[in-house]
Amino acid sequence: MALIVDLVFQLLQMTLVIAVAPLLTGIVRATKSRLLRRRGPSLIQPYRDLIRLARKEAVVADSASWLFRFVPYLVFAATWVAAALVPTFATGLLFSWSADLIAIIALLGSARFFLALAGLDVGTSFGGLGSSREALFGALAEPAMIVIVFTLALVAGSTQLSTVAAYMASSFVGLRVSLGMALVALIIVALAENGRVPVDNPATHLELTMVHEAMILEYSGRHLAVIELAAMLKLVLYVSLIMCVFAPWGLAIADASVADRLLGAFLYLAKLAVAGVALGVFETSIAKMRVFRVPDFVGAALMLGFLGALLLFVSRTLK
Amino acid sequence: MMGLSFDVAHLLAGGLVLVSFMLLYQTRLYALLNVFALQAVVLSLSVAWQAYVEDAGHLYLTAVIAFTLKAIVVPYALHRIIAQLGIHRDVENVVGVGPTMLAGLALVALSEVVMLRIASEADVLAREDLAFALSVVLLGMLMMVVRRNAVSMVVGFMSLENGLILAATGAKGMPLVVEVSVAFSVLVALVVIGVFLVRISERFETVDAHALDRFSGDRR
Image (cartoon, rainbow over all chains, first blue to last red):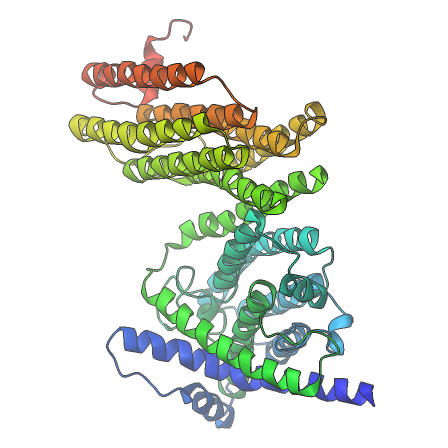
C-alpha cells in the first residue's frame, strides 16, 4: 500500500514538473516585459506556442541523418528523468533513492552531448558554431557543478539529494561561508546551463552570439516543441535544485503525511513563482556578456566551488 | 555560544580570503580600490568580532585603526593619485585571469596544509585564523607578481598587510604599541609609494612596471 502511495506521488511529481515548466518560462517572460514597460504575452503563452509547434509539420534537412530525428526525444527523456530525481515538494520519493546528484549531472551532460551532435549533424555553419560554444561553456560549467556537489557532500555527508535536503532543513547547518559560495557558484552554473542572459540570450533567434538557439536552428514542428519543452524543464530542474538545497522550507521530509505533501506542493509552486520573478528582474538588470568573457564568468563559479571546498576542509579537520 | 562565535569568525575570515580573490579578479583600477576598501571593512569586522569574543578592549582599537586607515584614508589617497596622474584605467595582467585564479587556489591549499601541520596543537580558532591569514598574505604577494601596473602592486602590498593584522589578532593579543607602529609604518609606506608613483610617471610617462625593465642592469 505504501509503495502504491509513493508511486502515485512520484508520478504526481513528474507530471507536476512538466506541467509547470512552460508556466515558469511564462512568468519570467512576463516579468521581463513588465519591467520594460511592455504589456507582454499572457502567462500561458508558452503552452500555446508548444501546441502550435506540435501541430505543425516537421521539416527535416536533406543532409540530416537518423540522429537528427532521435535527438529531441533523447534530450527530453534525459532531462525528464533528471527532473524526476530532484526532490521538488517532498524528499524520499520513490525514484530519488535510485540515483544521486552526480547521476543528475551525468544525465544533463549526455543531453548536452546529443544536442551538440545534432547541431553538427546538419552541417550548417550556425549549428557548428553553437555546438562548439556549448561545448566550451559545458567544459567549464560541469567541473564547477561537480565541485559544488563535493562541497555539499562535505557538509551534508552524502551526495543523495534527499539526504542533503533533509540535512539542510534541519538545524545542524549553522552559518557557513562555504555554503554561501556554493550558492553563488550554483546560480552562475544554472545561468550558464540554461542559457540565460549574461551568458546567452534566450529571447533571440538572429544574433551572432547565440548559443542554444544556434544549435536548434534547423529544428521545426514537433521536434522543436520537444526541445523547447526540454529546455523549460531544465530551467525548472535547476530552480528546484537550488531551492531544495538552499531554501528547503516547507519541503515534506520522507514519510510525511499526504496532507503535508500537498502543502509542500503548494509551497513549491509559490517558491517557483518567486524564483521566476527574481530571474526576470535579474535578467533585465544585467547586460549580455561578450562570448569570450563567459569563460571568466563560469570560471568564477569553478573558483568559488573550489574555495568553498577548501575552506570547509580546514574547518572539518579541526573538529 | 561557542558554535556561533566560531561560525561567525569562520565566515568573516573566509570572507577575507574571498575578497582577496576578488582583488585578483578585478581588472579596473577604481573598482580595485573599492574592493580593497571592502577588504578593510571585512578585516575590521573580523577583528571587532575577535575583540567581542575574547572580551579584549584593545582589539577594538585595532579594528578602528584598520577601518579608518585602510577603508578610508588609503583608498582615498590612491584615488587622488590615480586622478592626478591620469593613469590609464585598465590593469594589464602579466598572466591571464584563469591561471592567476588557479595559482591563487594552489596558494590557499598550500597555506592550509602548512598550517594544519605546524599548528596542530593550537586553539581551533587561532589555527584557522592563521591559515586564512597566510592565504591572504600569499594572495597579496601573488597580486604583486601578476600585475604590471604599479598602483595595483601597491594594492597587493596593502592587502598583504591586511593578512598580517588578521594573523596578529588570531595569535591572542599583539601588543598595542606594535599594532600602532605597524599602522603608521603602513602610512609612511603609502607616502613613500605615492612619491615613487609620481616620480615614475613623470620620468617614464607610465606606471607600467615593464618600463623599468630597460634600466635593470643584468638584462642584455
